Length: 166
Image 1: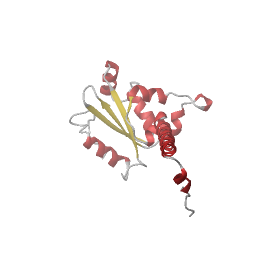
Image 2: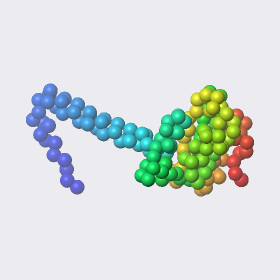
Image 3: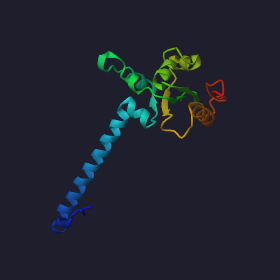
Image 4: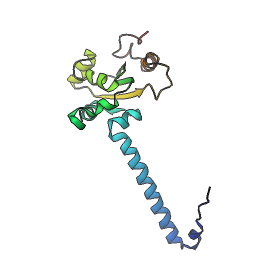
């Protein structure tokens, strides 16, 4: 491996050296910011990074049309769990699916958990987070779902009616 020759820095005056350092820091910061924003501005990036987002943002990103005017999110619908958090009532709902994007979407369009939908329609503030099976250490979806149901006490203090699939 070749060594980087930075001996030219010794010839710079103090103000020039400070300028080189500042410009370098700005460039590195801009690169890191752009990488971070790319990974959280798309639904794919949000899912990959397991970021919590508002349900309204999720629905907007979910409904983006791709080539052939089909939902672009259909290509990123993967196995995993989704964690719905009602901030207004401090309640959680944890679900699993082979297609987490489509399944989570159902809860906010009246085709999922009726209590979640009723509270959403009533105006409660919700966020959602996705955890893919691939990114977890779980052996299967049932184990992953049970872990999060227990973690968020989603049966006793949430919307779940069971402790997960057995």
